[in-house]
Amino acid sequence: MKIISLFKKFQFFNFPSKNQILFYDFIPDQFMNTIFGSDKSYFIFDKNRKINFFIFMSIFFSYKSIKVIFIDNLITAYTCNYIRFVRPNIVINSTDNNINFYLLKKYFKEVYFLAFQNGARHIVNDLFGNKKLIDKKNHKRFSSDYIFTFNSAIGKMYKKYIDCKTIAIGNLKNNKMNLNSISIKNGKIIYISQFRLHTLANDYMYSHGEKVCTIKKWLETEKKLIPKLCEYADKKNLELYILGASRDSKSIKKEKSYFRKIALGRPWKYWNPYKLNFKERYQSLDKFEVVVSIWSTLGYELFGRYKKICFFRQNIKNLNDRNFGWPENFSKKGFWYSSDITQSEVNRVLNNLRDINLREWIEKISPIRKKVMKYDKNNSILINKVNYLILKKKCA
Image (cartoon, rainbow, N blue to C red; front, side, top):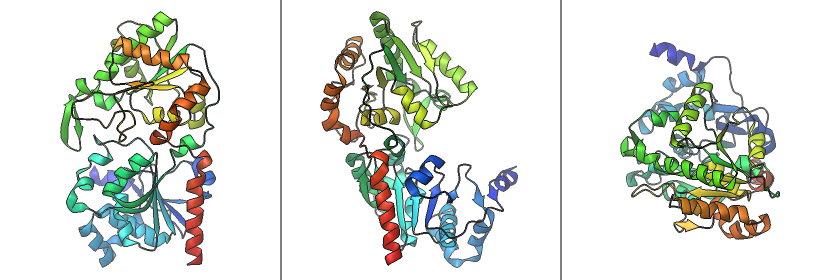
């Protein structure tokens, strides 16, 4: 069965040719043309993680490739062969928390390696908790020419473990959207679900093989917050929605059941836009008066576009990487966020957002916004850097 499963991963007839830009992982079509100026591109690993059979087999006919296996691993050896075959000027990675990408630069001094942050990064069960990355004996083993980050603070975290330059640009998808310029007063509040079906299947939360805390503790903030949001909405005669995180009918059913249980009989509405494209999802959220989040990437993206959004921090002893704005060290409470999940705090924060007008809101968060999620309209910084590096290679 394992042999059959491996066989299905191979691509036999999709043979790449020389290209200026090579993508490490699949990047959606809407970014391919508008950001990178290429509609004919090759991916080392496509969205189905397919492997080119001929390039894979070539590993075992080259001493150089076999040596890479022993220095790093088989994936790196395969990737190196793919790069040698395509001979790109630039290799771009959209999966910034895949540390295998950062093993490549040392083998290709003449090629530029770029990565861009595609999600909020943490320590627990994420990049900055990866033992291989943070082990001091691996210092400078990982490298990239540039990493484009959400903000400067997280950029310092990348540079702490990866030999690279960082440029804060925000999130690529978010930068394709216009800044929020409409003040909504329609009595609709939406909470961004943290529901993950695989999480509920376990008793403990693990991070890179080590036990962090019980699942009960991990979900405590959400379970405390939902009834209080329901209470607030009920007393203010507002409509409370929950933005579903599920992507199929089975998960949606279980997600609804999960929230019905923790809402304690209070009314709310379920809304799941997963069938919409990313622009439609973002535009739909702009139609809500206030958005509520714990630590989602989407929440930070909305904050970066001046949407009225509040955050209620996850409180787990000795863990702060889900705090608002981490790794920036903000106070425990602010105008639009709090670490106390009490009814009075929920009321205070939501009242703040509902009472302030858009102009005042923009003025209030502007000094903080770029520390959390920068905004570069249409990704001009990234586009200019890619074009500059291509031109530089041509002139070399």
